[in-house]
Image 1 (cartoon, rainbow, N blue to C red):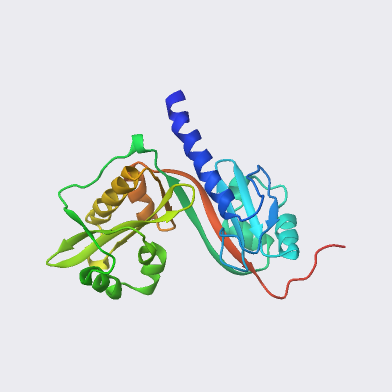
Image 2 (image 1 turned 90 degrees about the horizontal axis):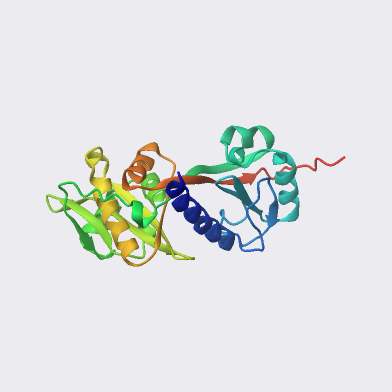
Length: 250
């Protein structure tokens, strides 16, 4: 039990350090909701409120004092684990839009389980014609979900018949975090290609001394992360309140 707690504790501390930095203000994780006003927060899109739960604590930001007050009041008294739940948020807040929740997973290098299988991956420059063609053929939703267009590393690609069938890379985030991005062509899914591509990207991140982070909503993507040794430690959600919000104070 003790050896199992050690990596979880270290991963939790690193993950919280990252999201506290991204909050853009002197906000910290706490067991109960406490919403900090931070117009430049990276927990969510500009103008939205964001909530991140890691372990048994949460951090939250809002773009202005009124939104912070409304979110804090509506979610007061709830345990941290429930703060990113869609049903809870919709029931308690006047939501205009919601992004997520997405699971947040992290990988201790000692727990990495490479998954190359029989698949060969090769690093491609993000401007390589084969990779650019792969991106052009992908759907807008898949591109947005994967984040593959934002990688700052080579694209570790699986090629079949001269074409890229799957690719992975990562974006350098603050605090030594490598944010993994993976995409597989629809016709090539279900054959372990995402695992192979992601395995190569994770190995590269570990070799650079960075902590791999995996953020995903689809269960298929979360399964790939678990196969590689990632531990899900929390979740993230972004919310935009309706413009016609009225004060709830009496």
